Length: 305
Image (cartoon, rainbow, N blue to C red):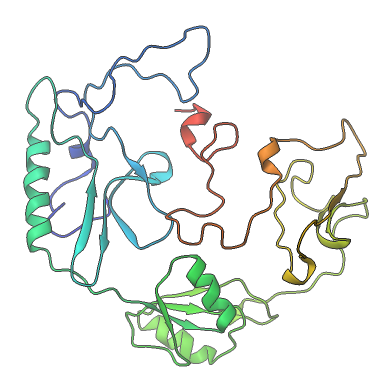
């Protein structure tokens, strides 16, 4: 549990399991085609349900889970977003319309939620402080992060984002962190980074096997070779420089060299696509989130529970 003051005080994970009765939000005994395997596993009965529709935690936009559950704790049945003068609370706990008996925890949580929404003070939105440039700021915008830029470390308690080219006073940074500060360093683009992080440029990739090369209008935009982990099946995603894109027809060419087994492309047709960098910049989930079954992000498709 993530915790939220008096809302969850005194409660543990044991209080959120095997509730009396059955939730009624979803069909308890669906009709299955028994000649085929159910894509997301078998569902039979709603007895003991706590939440019939926990949602995947939004990747962006400032939502805070108050309860976490399911695969990798990536889902939440109780989530909130703080605004400047209030909050939005989304509750998918099965608090009402339960069949088969009363549940004290459902009654307790319903009462606490109302009190929490009425009495808990709203927390002002605190933007992160960016020590970086315009490109770093554009990345934070795509991630949906509220931020402001400065050249000095703020007071302890304000989160800091170190830009990809930050090369400031490392001693001051260490002292600030020791005093309780929190910082996130973006992927480095210079050899020397903060706190002992260093990068070494490599002039070779792999052991000399011919690469799989992707070109846009005749210019290479990316490649995979034998030095790439899982090179035979890795998913490739490349950013095309704006200077290479032209109005009308653009040519994408992929050189595939096969040294064993069947050659060519694998995967689904939808895997080969082009989209603007900011295609889903304002969504709740990362642009690479997929909802299809074969390669989607829903963990239930693995059926390993």
